[in-house]
Length: 307
Image (cartoon, rainbow, N blue to C red):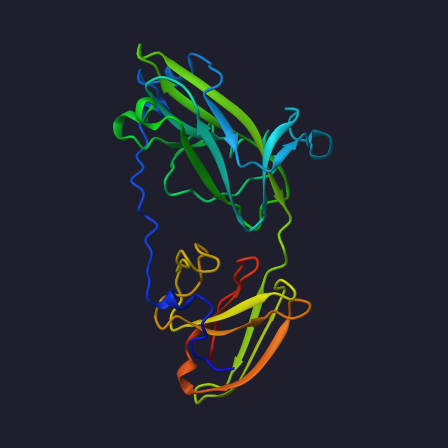
């Protein structure tokens, strides 16, 4: 094994820095709190056929085996604990201005007695109160989306489910809130489930290097996707670097920084997802950091310092 750049389509990693703050989303407070200073304005009229969910996994009624409130058969999205999933909705009809909401993260009645751990999507504005937490998106400046120029509109809320989140079905709600030409409020909502499944065993990496002078190095890993491809990455610093678009596992955040970021090895993961590599390296590797990327699942391992 040579600790230099091995081309697998990730060589641009050390030269490209992406910004995830490109969105200019600005939530319109009138939709979140009501033009008249309360939520009744936006919830005063219930309407139908102005929104729909899409890209969902299927339909399910989990109440018999999971104990969630009996809402019957609903659409659901599925995600493995420790992974991310996009939940999408579409505004399909209406008048004038509107905004999107996703609601239900903190309600103990809909989280099966547990706590749904989530990460904020940067283009959705969070409102956290004593009653509930919800997220709102209204990208059309101070008036939210406009029917005349943005119909239909599609949005996705990306939720990163923490690895500690208990498996089960979580009942959430997407809503579309707005106003018509008479400034009367209206509201359309749809319940759905988020199915959290048990996460895979963590991908673990061990590095035993001869430091500080260099020499033999032993690299081993376990719990990768069997008979697949892995990439061993190296950098001089830790960080939170996202793999750029156009590369395998684009968007996956590494635990490495960009200082001398490179692919040290690419190859098979092993018959059972475990493998050991033996090599020799110079002293320049010492003090740097390694991380393994499972190209099949886009999971990353722990970060290990060569010392």
